[in-house]
Image 1 (cartoon, helix red, strand yellow):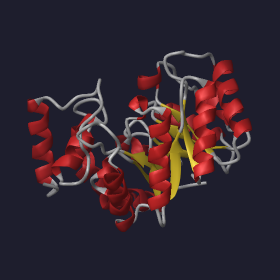
Image 2: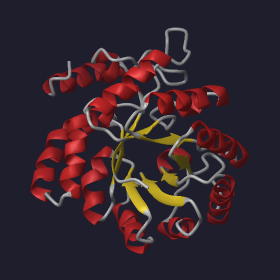
Image 3: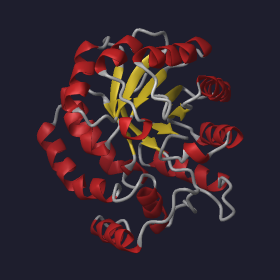
Image 4: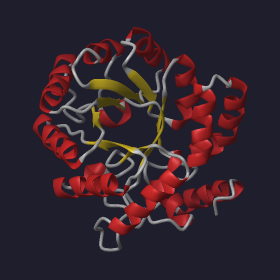
Length: 290
């Protein structure tokens, strides 16, 4: 359903903590004007964990309504299968092109439970689903064997792989059907994952450097490995700076420092420590972003 660069959008907030609709629309335009053709609202970077159902669908509605060129892959995952189905149906009704659905977190389901969860979602909607594997947040890993079983389900069109295990990514790419798209879920793993056959990345960094991330992904898709290596090396300090603290604390700070809409974080996330914020500012300055 998709290859290339997708931006995992932040959710800008007003001072009172409500969603900043005008700000979110501005961020959609910022991305599209710089060539990004896929947007992911309400993922981890969009603070989905602290959005209630109404806000979650509100953010998706805003992004779908504002986008003119980009496909919208709406984050609709949950540790409750019924809740994930509710959000997925809602996103489909709002016009999303696809869904990003994280593996159930905290519950730590067995492989059979994971397969049952995604089968229930697949049965409930008609649009493509990208399965999001991020063990550092969910508490359990979708193994390559389980992911390849999920790839057999109707509507399950791809995987966002953020396990950090390059061997696992290699096994998924090697064993998946040809129409199953593997995407890196980690900016720093984009080059190695794509070298193995992944087709792109769902990126945090592209919130602030969309052109540079687009260049990296296109260089890999076009087989220009030496150019991609240089671009990746240029971006490595930024990748590190954006994860000095829990995502999306650094990227939201970076967006704010660039003069774009960001607003506050929702608790329990909080502002960066003064020392880490100074380190982030230094890196952003080196890239000419502030």
